[in-house]
Amino acid sequence: MGLTQLTSLQRKKVQSANMLYEYTCYWIYKLHQQGVAWSIENPASSLMWITLPFQRLSRELRRMFTALVLDTCMFGSTRKKHTAIWTSVRQMVTLARRCDNSHKHEGWGKVGNKFATALECAYNTELATAWAFCIRQYAEEQGVVFPPEVLDDVSTSHLQMLPHYNKSTLGVQPRGNKLPPIMTDLLVGDKCFIGENRLLQTLAPGMRLPDNSSFPKGSRLLRFVNEKRGDVDNTCNLCKFAIIGRPREPEEFVQHAVKLTHPAMMPVLLDDFTTKAIDSQVNLSPVELRKLRLCWARRTTELCGQLASEEAELHNKLPHHLQRVLRAKRMRLFHELLTELQYKDDKIAVEMSEGFPLVGWLPASDVFAKQARPPSIHPDMLVSMAGSFSARAISTVKSSGDDVADLTLWEATMAEVKAGFVQGPFDKHELPATAVVSPRFGLAQKGKLRPIDNYTISGVNCAVGLQEKLKVDTMDEFAAVVKSWLQKAGGGVQLVGKTYDLQKAYRQLGVQSSHLDFSWIAVWSPVDVQA
Image (tube, rainbow, N blue to C red; front, top):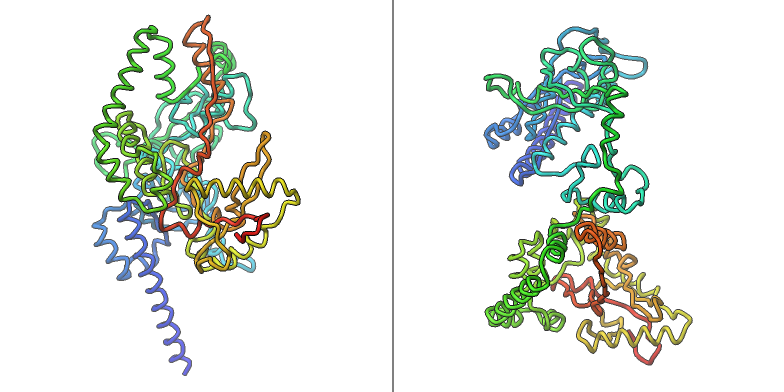
């Protein structure tokens, strides 16, 4: 009976493991098809690698991945553990370091109340750092822009850092470490082949080198480079070179420092379109500038005539709610002009004609800095709990205690109904079961009451994912434009400015038809109407 039970338990474990392997291989294959980087690791002696799911995965991927084995003792571990890795990130081949038997190993077995295998499960700092650096190399190859090492290297491609850089050129020192240093205390040294230098074989990028006779005291391992050595065409010979940074001598440090430009004297960095506009104002004569503007106006007018029939056809095909909101918008003209200008987000015109989504992952514009913010709840969950979310939101809709403010907010809402931006009013009993309601309140601002729709309390904002950090220009950006203009003009220029405000700008953007259920608004009615 005991043997039968054991065999049955073993069989269940094998079946469970096979299901796990099938599931793992399925998702690895899906990730590979989508071009998403992946890696999987397990002990090199594990039978997992020869199971049917992994053998089938190997055939399906046609070996279009990197397989490597490393010994964790080469990354500072006290025990020799063979680890195998399959990955689509070829830069990880730099981790393929086998023990050179130049050090002692602790034994396996039981250590106190724990087994040594449990102590070796987690990656130590050296291995985790080296692994992360491989991912960084892969990201760089994919076009990800990383922060520069010194202030002089900041460019318009560093979108996350650009506002802080321009602020520093205006004499305002940003808080924290939002900018790189003006200079570093390290100099880049020669490339070293780590296969011939035992000292570098157990270090991770960023680590200080132990005192030795080969490198000056205080030197650091800066990074690895992905190059071949000689004529050897072997994957294992890639990424085996290390770049070492040696400390500057004090006199050398001072000599370099005095040649640097103070941040307040550095040129302002603006986007290409703004820079081109300023250059036209500075370099062209009044007659040439007027000709340029006339040419642009003529071209725009011609496009209006050429695209008139397409504009009409596009508007006729729009959903009814978008026809009202976008009736005065020339979306085909907008798209054509953005395309001619080679604007990065020229697809915005198409998205406008289709209506913008309110939940889910919003599309990337490639204009703002990359910074993912995933949704905290899934849109499906928002739909399934629409009733409770809406009930909570509606319960917050009450009188502000100011009869004048309540009436002003109500009249502003009715004005939007008249303009075709919203529909209603409806009684709450008319709500569809899938409707998600957001409460509206009034905010006194500069002598007027601005209607604010609270999409947070309704849960709509929680179901939105962003791929970028949206940024609204402030006075700092305006001051940077003025400084750049003055720098280019050289002096004596008189700048005159004027502000323009697009009335109810956010109400002139339509909602995607499939997301209309997320756009319901509840507002307190001070008159004899239920809404």
